[in-house]
Image (cartoon, rainbow, N blue to C red; front, side):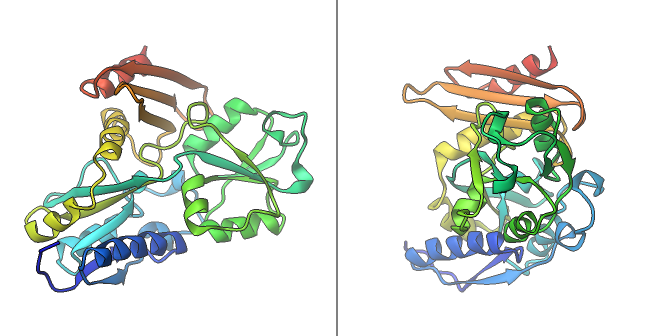
Length: 301
């Protein structure tokens, strides 16, 4: 790639998964002959570990501080888990590119002592399930109204340790993080939930690369790393979230995929609150244009 630039400064959170993501971007840049360095930034979501997500005020609690550093020109690119990123970028910033999509599903990780083959999801009755996501809580209760939900915070390895140490019978985690970190799950029973039934967060499994709009050099570089097909699907998912004026607090799942014929299919699940009934819908279209709006109409019907 014939683009000349001094080292690109990559802004990232400091968790193992965030660093995997930043190192992945760094390797992609290196493959294209571009030097880079990491700048680790602590966010509000990292600092406040004693509260569930639904109790933390505001939006963007895993992204705001990184975006502010980008606006101050302390970094050139921000690497985010796209599902954590608000649908509206701050003035002066934009999503320049997105990554490939890792497995978008959620996985239910169960301790061996809590496995019961005859029960739905192979989880014993009245099991204690750990998650701080309103979306996961709502759908888990829809599948299994008997379970007891308990907030859990910390990075992925920390949550697995909390499960192993006995505070929970099972926890819900994104397959993408578990796969990318190549974590050893041999001591647990893993139920791989179908994203068309247990619907993931919009853009789950995708990385978003955010830049300053004015920084045309960095934007040109990252256009070479852009996955267009991923963007078309996640744009639909995030547009649904935007139309509902929702954020991380909203119990909303949205998953879009394109089939080999070019048709789009969307699965969505929404509840008013984490402990209220979930509405599931499926909608298909030959085009992505107007698709989010059509899904919204079905959700509101």
